[in-house]
Length: 582
Image (cartoon, rainbow, N blue to C red; front, side, top):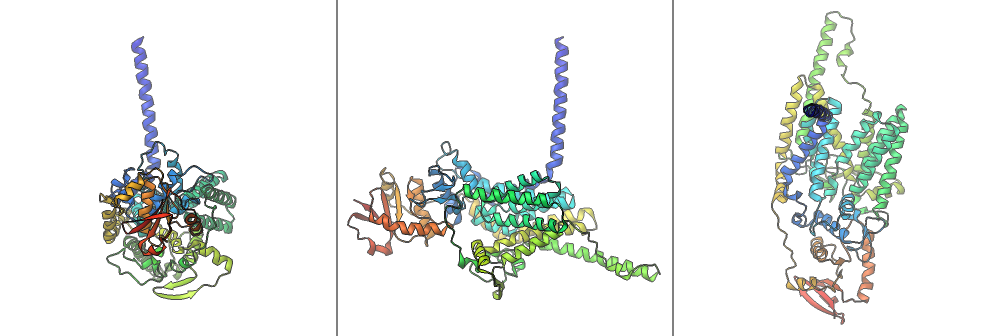
């Protein structure tokens, strides 16, 4: 009896194991394209940035200055601020005013999530390395899915995903501002667009709503970027009178989710002042697609126009251009062969039209109209009111005041060329694969061109490898022992910048890092919200009127003439003058 029971159990276990293996095999078959694409992206990230940055307690790499330090310190001050509503507000970096974590590009959704666990997190904690790896993985995953949608070949999809990962517009931004590494959101919006015919109204609303929340919680620029993709598909379907209700449901959900997320994070707590000077300095240059701006050893960098021309970087990479050229060459060969075949048929007396030889082997694509609308939208926004080619201004676009106001809020409008760049990458891979005469040739060429893209941009990649893979040790410039004395004083809770410090960002970061590490607040910080800087300047007079014993008042050495308050003792330390109340 016992033996029979054991045999029965073994039989049942084998059956369950067989079912599980079958499910695993089915899952792998259905999902291997995006899994392998994600693997390509993560491996690329590790090859460039190393594994050290994935250590959540390793923060030194974020304290070397620049936007990365701004991102990290924004998280530090937000973590130590009390919970408020909206949940994204903090008061420790612009004390006593509140500012949203949105304006430090600290990846707000990640900041809110990890703040929930601040009580159990180590004192030194960063999530930016994990975020970077996730962005690279998602970039590869969606790149592979997009290619596979058109070519239906796994090898080409996985290999081609590398071109999405190592494109200069991705690598140039993620190095200086990790929040802008979420360019996979653009690819995700592409994928949702081409998959829309498979969605019901509910699914369309749910998926586009989730994308809107992710865009708003990553970096505000992705809200209009992904929104343009959605609107392009909506207009395309409206022209064809198909799936309009699903698209409208997606649009409404996207707007509600993105606006709601910004509101929840406190993004509307301040009036946003348009950045007028940046508008004409950071546009897309008409030579941008062929201007490597230092991202190629083969192609020379061309002239640019504007002090922030790098924001309009649109060079897709040498490998992508070769892929595009190969597709064009293969198409031209096919065209000539068709032309010759038509001529032969005519000379042999076969009834045929001479124009048949000129027929292009193109089928009407359901997404072609949407892609065209998107390209026109992106180009119109990206060029800015001042259209430049090289160093010359070609024309200025006259627009109504209300439209100019919207344009000014965009500021770095050159970033709107990114969807066009990704369409070029996608189109080049698909075109080459469709036109190649032998099935394996496209996969082989993609491997070769991807390697050439890496080799051509190796100096840029090596700079990033040296910057991030090296075991960097942060050493503060504040070396005077008096800083330790003040840090150990439990009565000192605040730091006030009396001198104007924001123009010297590195000095602000040094002092802010000192304040954050020792549980102090600062009254001003480098944020993308000009309004809060104005409020900080207005509150400074009040702070000096009521000198407090719990505050360090920081002056530049060049402002020594201001150090005349009889209620304070002035101490010189590391090129600064610090006032402390008696």
